[in-house]
Image (cartoon, rainbow, N blue to C red):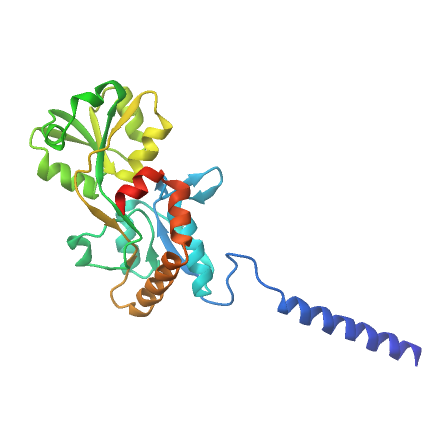
Amino acid sequence: MKVQFVRTFILFLFVTVFFWCSMAPQPVGAASGGQPLRVGITPNFPPLVFIQGDRIAGIEAELAMMLGEELGRPVKFVEMKWDALIPSLLEGKTDIIMSSMTVTRERQVRIAFTEPFLKSGLVAAVRAEEVPKYPTTESIKNIIGMVGIIPNTTGESFVQKNFPYAQRSSLSYPRQAANELQQRRIIMFVGDAPTVIWLVSENESSIGGIWLPLNEEYLAWGIRKDDRDLQASVNAALAKFRADGRLDRVLYKWLPKQYMEKMK
């Protein structure tokens, strides 16, 4: 009788603990039983998405985790080279691209985009002492010499079309521009404003930004054209982040207030 009582009591404790554990809230980022949200990234574009220490960090990294929580799907970052982002999405190896991608007509032929999360534009960086040489956008475009770009980006396309006297030097990633400028192998680097802001902040004694927007661009996330449900869900989540202030909190964390106010 006593043994039976002990067994019954232990079973009761087990069931009680299991029940309360199952009711406990899950930690942020550990979404419920949904399918993983496979996020394609090239983590070379600070402050948007990059490697910081031993983790993936930046604006889009944080927004990806927020998005996964909102959709009830655990986030899996899939790292790859920039040129592989769109092919991997189309082949079904990823679900969404969140990697400093600008909306362009050319890309819209192949993939769909969510609503933009950030208004941006191309700007230039040069050696700090040479900033006064470029007081206007025309003086930037008429530069004679080697200009650093990242291949297959809007920066490369813009320089090709609008810098008639420049030669292009292909760089592997934006941070490489700092060394190329310091070693005088290039005389200018053209890239997305957030990336150039970060580049200058890391090398403020030797590199200066020319804060004259060369164009107007919008950063958004790429999705397969036939994945309309995901596109609608992401747009709804982004609208919620914008309305409740969470989007601004992430953007202002990583970008200067002056830039954010100018881009609104």
